Image 1 (cartoon, rainbow, N blue to C red):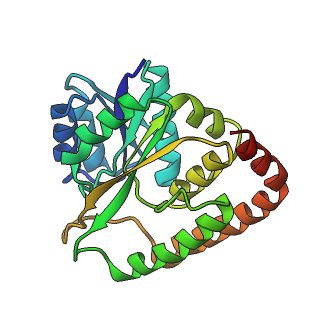
Image 2: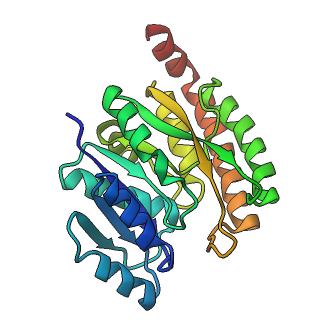
Length: 244
């Protein structure tokens, strides 16, 4: 069975999110909007969007961060009866013309996590681009493989059963550290993954909540935890892969 939706974490993206929702609905995807304690102006826009068909809205009373909002959205998607969820950023950076291709690959590989491999244009902030390369190296070390070419792109389709089994059993980072951590921990469980190129554009007037020093510190701390977690799990990880 393959019954997908889109999960969109939203924090003060009232300008960009209506176009994102329209594009996803046009692609045939119901939307789960997660209001991560946004401003009253953004909350009003989300409330209006939620009046439309195939749009579900949940509100978080306290800001949880991107990862916390995504996890809340994935749980809600499962509660609503969906089997897969496409994570999409609300700021319009993802090329939603790729949605149909991602859905098609997911339909043919329902057990797989389908991840975007970003193709950046000149709009990408150089500081974030360079920091990604360091994260890639640590992800390869902590996952004991090269199967994760990019762990930071938040455009991916999760099969909900294995993803929620992980989320409900492990304390994951709730902010920008969520995207890489969930991939590494799923790789430890031999989660099948498929990778598709997708274009990423950072609008000049877009609102980014990435805090350069704070979020990079969180990501560094996450890599340290994963490294020691990998050492502890090393025999079981290698045993699972040998069995596979």
